[in-house]
Amino acid sequence: MLVPEPEIVGCVVRNANPAGCQARVAQQIAAVRQRGTFAAPRRVLILGSSSGFGLAARIQLAFGGGAATFGVAYERAPDAELTGSAGWHNQQAFDHFAESAGLQAQSRFADAFLPQTRQAVLAWIREQWGQVDLLVYSLASGVRVLDDGRRCRAVIKSLHNPLEGWGLDLAAEQLIRQQVMVAAEQEHRDTVTVMGGEPWQQWVLALQQAGLLAPGFHTLAFSYEGPALTHPWYRDGTLGAAKRHLQQTADALRMALRPLQGDARVVMCKALVTRASLVIPFLPVYLMLLMAVMKDKGLHEECPQQMARLFADQLYGPGAPRCDALGRWRLDEFELRPDVQHAVLARLSELTADNFRQLGDYAAMRSELLHQHGFMPIAG
Ligand code: NAI
Ligand code: NA
Image 1: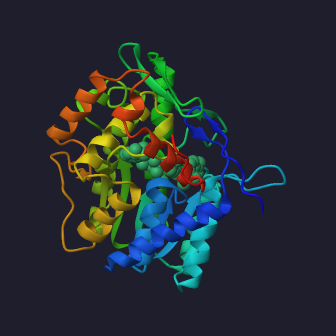
Image 2: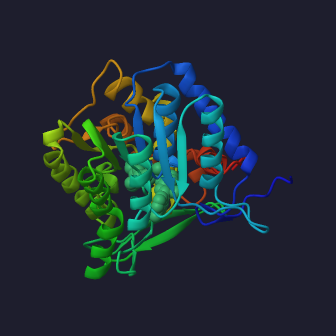
């Protein structure tokens, strides 16, 4: 089959190279195996299993911890004209390698926000596993269809003042000026509905009501807060509001799971390249500066390294998760180090449309995104 050319629009890659996706999954599996084994929970349900943190978590838990996994993702299948999305090929590749390794892996492409998806997955768990030990909630979506059929859209806007700053266009390979508007009340609510904790809670409570939670059941969801520099457009914007809701959901679920000796946590991750992160205004520019600084200091991480620390080192390894005053687990301590943030700010203050390739790790960021879609790196 002909290797397609990447189709880039803004900071989104719209197609994928199937063989490259498979090779990348194989590479992640090899890295996990090389790191050695640990004792993972036996039966793990992952929502958002086809890319980013969810896929990295699944590979870590299955190939490092021997877990049986059930993955749910919502992706585009290939057809006569289009290659299908990277996540579709990633998930197929995962299933293939898991089967070859004798690991149980069940995958669905379905909308995890819909009650019928929940019911189908619950039925499978009841029949095949009896119970589930861990649920990883890693959905990143711009839309959620509600039970009454209404389509709710997440918007990435400010809650206080309109903002302007540098953005990046990976197709044009240029810095651009970006504006972020103030969200209307309804947009704010809708973003919390899509990216907040309600669907997470629905899944956990449905599993609990069906008697499918194993004693000691754990669940976790990924969040971001970032340094002061990003607060106006992330923490203090619509996405930050959704993440606060996710946090409140974790607190509520922790209470609900007490009788089972269970636990529910938000995990604060670092900013890194995924399909979901690069569509956030201003984030690509912050990220390419952060990547340059963290590589300089030997601190660079992508999803696989974050998930290795979380599962293999901390949760099910010799260490323990780093817990903050709000009960959140933290994997973002290197990003937030004062020396890292000083260096990022210094670079940002010198940034121009002409020098961004030198000040930021522009080429590596672009090739990481292309790699995630199965394309070989292309010099920036
Ligand atoms: P991603 O885009 O790589 O993965 C999203 C996953 O959700 C994919 O598997 C996709 O198929 C699935 N999905 C989307 N809509 C779905 C639906 N309706 N039903 C079933 N599956 C669906 O995104 P990423 O970055 O891994 O995001 C996961 C979580 O991590 C998000 O909550 C995000 O906010 C959080 N996070 C991301 C950071 C970053 O820098 N990328 C940093 C910290 C947290
Ligand atoms: Na994910």
